[in-house]
Image (cartoon, rainbow, N blue to C red):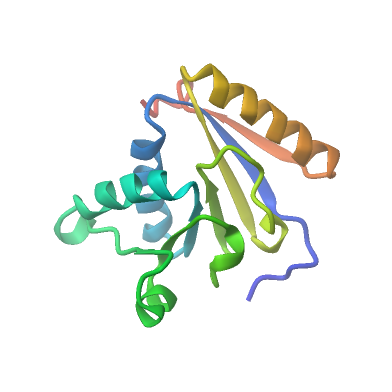
Length: 151
């Protein structure tokens, strides 16, 4: 169980050419490390992500549940897709694909923000989220996906 008295690790992953493709790769990597992931985004983006996650086959399949799915399935899924963090029972990794800083992020061990490489509105909103995390006293890790070769 996560110690909610400690501050979560906050990381910004910049320069994602396609945020949903990057989310799929991130989720796959997290599952390989037995992490449970909560993805927060508007419902339409969650549906788009779910469709992409279903395309992985065999040993690459990314088991997940979307807010509103059967409660038992939702509780067992290692990845849950929700509109608000409060709807998830997982408290390990929070992957934010939304436009705002997710309410309740403090209860997670790690928060990951994904930032577009070309969408200027997304980048501006990410800068605002960065400042909000910073003003709340959170240390922030920065990962430039271009420098890391994650295109």
